[in-house]
Amino acid sequence: MKKYDIIIIGGGVIGCMTARALSRFDLKVLLIERESDIGMGASSANSAIIHAGHDPMPGSLKAEMNRLANPMWDQVSADLGIPFKRSGAYIVAIGEDEFGCLAALKERAEKNGVLTEIFNADEMLKREPLVNPATSGALFTPTAGMVDPFAACVASIENAIQNGVEVLTDTAFTGFIMEGKKIIGIHTSQGDFACRWVVNAAGTYSDEVMHAAETRQDFKITPRRGEYYLLDKAEIEINNILFPVPSKVSKGILVLGSTHGNVLVGPNSQTTDYKENKAVTPEGLAEIWQGAQKLVPSITPRSVIAVFAGLRATGNAECQTPGVNYHNDFVIERAGEVDGLINLAGIESPGLTAAPAIAQRVTELLKEGGEKLTEKPGWNPIRPARPRFNHLTREEQAALVAQDPRYGRIVCRCEMITEGEIVAEIHAPLPARTYDAIKRRTWLGTGRCLGSFDMPRVVDILAHELNLPVTAIRKKGAGSEFLLRQTKEVEA
Image 1 (spheres, rainbow, N blue to C red):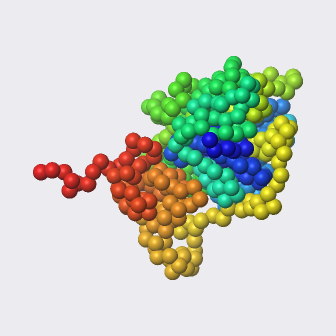
Image 2: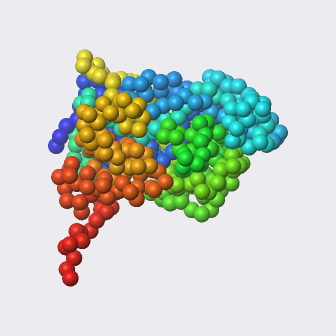
Image 3: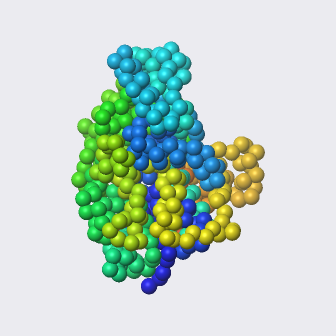
């Protein structure tokens, strides 16, 4: 049985950033992910916002982690070479009644240490001409920003791998190996592994991991599904993050730009008992569209190029700060009932924002638990970004093509993704081995044609580079092969 110091369960942004934080120390670390690639859960289907921190209940872990992590993103994005834009965000009031709510939101933001400013209607329209002319003003939070959430996963885990962390995908956790009340290893679909510590970053399944260790039996994840529209950047351009005035259960339907240039609309919030329920519904999409048009009346259905849904891992934990009555808070703890388990659970919004601070908190919990953390003298925090052909100048493009002619062959015409970029991802520290893995890393197939032009070529490239038959190339995990057989194999 292979031995590790620490095993991380879950390859979302929390698990990946935790792996990177732990790679700094002289530890043998393994991260396991049940899916065929990292970041396929909430980390690949969310609003991609680095929140300023105006919304969480003061005194909650959500508020604390948001406050600590928000300023970390400038350094994190620079070190990891990921797209990040500190754009600020606007909580837009429509009508005088909603304008009256901004003062209370500002007060909460200030209790969380968040800089804010209230603008009148004229200033809001000046800053975002497409906003509803009926706006009465907005609360502006300048420290909010936009990030590519999947790039944050990939870059974090690649940097961790470069610093010695091991990763196993297609590897599901199935149980703990216990010695009394002490965890000494885990059972997985790929065999057993020994360890001293397990970090539970299993997202919507984090409650099941807890229960397998007979800890926090009353904790439950109730997923909340959020549906989205993705709009064509050739049809509409918004460079801001527009929130509505929030309700008691949700931040509401947003209209926002992205680091890729597309406009995103959503999400709604629908409770579901099924942890894989990422279906979109006519009712949900209608709800989103109505909410979006309240903020930006000029959006039209012709701009829509895709719909999708993600799941929030909503827990039922109560805030542990005395005097603060707040449910659905984060769980970040060393388990009290067993030795060797760290729980990171109920990490819904602002979980993406909080990820680097949560990763740092894990190292603190390990120290408190008696783990000696010795820094590696050669630890390297830098993960250089790979070239993105469409982002280069003509001179830079020509130099890249001269170095590698594959960068001169356009595979995805909508997003101008080249063969060179695809090949680079296939041979990256964490190889992209499926079409969707290439798509998430390069944004290939996300334009108006939705991959209808590039898909056959990408299948050929994957087959060639992985030395596999084309019939073995998958869209995502097992069972999603594109092709059944060669046409010429059909008998007359």
